[in-house]
Amino acid sequence: MDGEEVFERTSQKYADCRTYSDSGRIEGSLGIVTFKTFFVRPNLFKFEFNRRLLDQDTSGVIWSDGNGLYNSYNHDLDAAPSDSFSSLLAEIGSAAQEASSLVPMMLMPDFAGENALANAGPYESVEHTSIADRSCHRIRSTCSEFPFKADLLIDSLGYKLRRMIIEFNPELNSQVIFTDVSFDREISEDVFKLKHS
Image 1 (cartoon, rainbow, N blue to C red):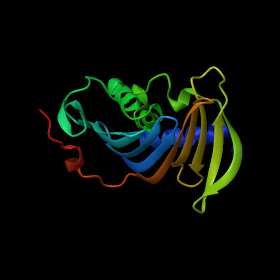
Image 2: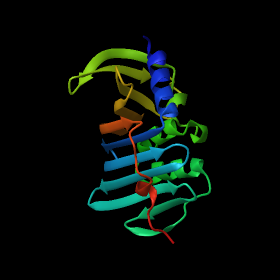
Image 3: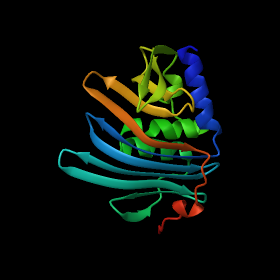
């Protein structure tokens, strides 16, 4: 299977799942971010993060409860960031780190911006490897004009992203490490019911 086929299968899995959740960590030039994502199709979504850059910590939640789109930074639950999922996805990238918006864009491809992973291709196979005893495809984007290079490690059986290395330029890069990825697991709607004004 070539890199484009691997990416297409992965992309389809994320676009078609009924529910999705993950947790993980981003390490890179712009600090360290820990995150959790929850999604129930069509419009329940929550992205929680903690970001540490130098000696400054920022925490936040960006979410949709099915009726509105909201954000909260440092536990201040009072802002509605936008009126569209496209703006919500952009908010994730600017609030946490740009790489943090890439999986939410795969979950909601109709609202993804031009910097989505789907636009970074074509993808080529680099090698077959493993992470924590799980066999993984490793594929790499090849579009030299794209704003970043993507190096993706994808579970060979479940087509889950295990790791992404996103290089914006030689001095600016992010490694996204997923520690828990689940498709189609039951997620309570209470997860998305945060207080806001």
